[in-house]
Image (cartoon, rainbow, N blue to C red; front, top):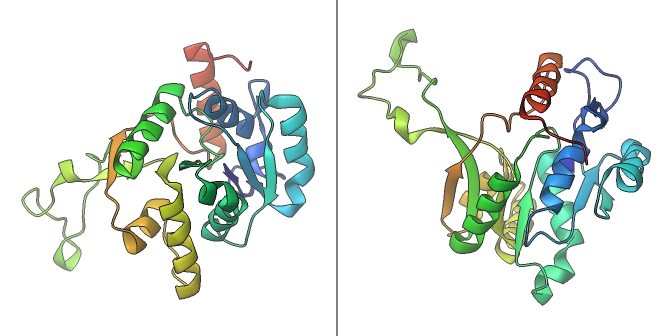
Length: 232
């Protein structure tokens, strides 16, 4: 799980992943959900050096399974590469066959969605959750909007995390990207650039949204209350 962001846009003085959400930190919600999924073993928690103390608190006080805490890089992709390198020996030995890469700022990932992504990634080589993007309009020529004939709205999805991939393949892809200086928008973009594995998508969830602004945190609190979710 990646927790490299700051709390600037959410209006906090600390990394938003460690802000409280109904009794636990934002990060702890996703970590505990992933830990409950059959087939998920090691939980690697990637944080900034200045957040190590917060991460250790999450590990000892807020999560149900032990975490492997490492520090990340300057970019999301570098942090992902460092996490994959951390697992490299286990990937090479076959002990880790598939990886799920999740954003700590999406705390309300469900057990069912995480399981579906893991299953699809093992079946196809790569999988991402997505929501059909029926609300997107594409720009046409000279400040016009593209017509429905020019834009297949049913072919567009808003991609979420966790994104799952065959471990050895995605590790090789990230090493190649590092050598080339390629920086993708997410894990799937690196896979698309450097592998031939098909990346399928499974239906995402509207509740699996990313906390970016203060109103997102308020919405997450409302969702927790409405769904009767528990911290333990």
